[in-house]
Amino acid sequence: RLTEVMQSIQNRHLAALIQAYLDDEALMANFCRAPAAMSFHHAFVGGLLEHTINAIEVADTVVKFYPGLNRDLVIAGIFLHDIAKTWELSYECAFGYTDGGYLVGHIVKSAMWVEHKAKEAEETLGEKIPQQLIDVVQHIILSHHDKPEFGSPKVPATPEAIAVHMIENMDAKLTMALRATRWEQHAGMDGNWTEYMKAFNGKLYRPDVAPAVAIDAAEQQPPRTQMLADDGADRVAPKPEPRREPASAPVEPGKLKITNPLFETTNSRKN
Image (cartoon, rainbow, N blue to C red; front, side, top):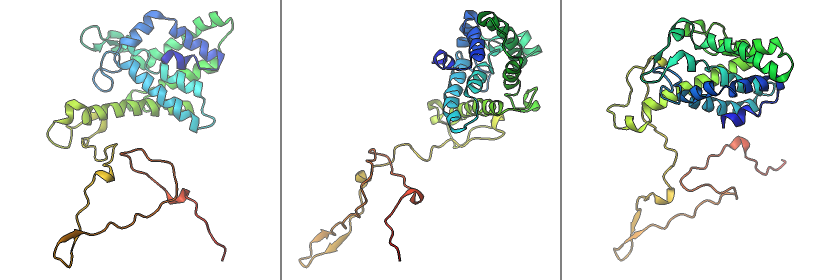
C-alpha cells in the first residue's frame, strides 16, 4: 500500500526523490522493522511503518477537502518525516537510542538525508531538482514536531507542513489514547480513569458510552399497559398506529437513523 500511494505522486522531481528512498533496500528493510518511538506511540516492531501508513491514509482523505493543499508534498512529507528513526533507534533486542540518535536525532538526520537522496534522484532524472522543492521538503520534516519545546527546529510555515504535523500528531495521540483506554488488555482494569499520562498532561476516561450498534427497537420490550375489561379479565391496550414517515433510504439493522431538519425539504404553500 505504501508503494502504491508513493507511486501516485505526480510531480516528477518529487516522485524521483521518493523513488530514491524506495530503491534503498537496506533502508526500506529497516523502515519495515523499526518502532516509531521508544515508549510513547507505536512503540513496537513495525510501528514506524504502521504510523506512516495510517497518517498517509488519513492525509489522502483530508487533502480532498482543501483545494490548494498540495497532495504530493503532504504525502511525501508524511513518508519522510520520521524516516531517520531507522537510524536513531536501536531495535535488535530491547529498544534504545543509538549514539547518533542522542547526538543528532531523527528530525535533523531525516532533513539531511533529503540532500543526499536528491543527488541520487538527479542522476536518475538527468536534471537538477529545484532547490526550492528540496528546501520545502526539508522544512516539512524540520517542523513536524510543531514547537521548539517539542524538539522542532522550525515551526510549520507552509500549509503542507501544518497538515503533516497535525495528521501525524493525531495518529500518534489517538493510538496512545486507544491503547490506554479501549484495548482488550485494559478492558478489565479497575476504575474509569487511566493513570496520569504525560503525553496528555492528565488522565483519560476509559468507558465507551456510545457503542457503535444501537439496540434494535423491535428487541426492546415495551411496558404492558393493561386495562380492565367488563368481564374482569386483563387485556393489553391496543398499540397506537405508527406515524407514517416519508419514504427514505433503508437504515441498516442495529443502527439509528440520524436526520437533520436543516437539510430536509417540505412542501410549502404561498399565503
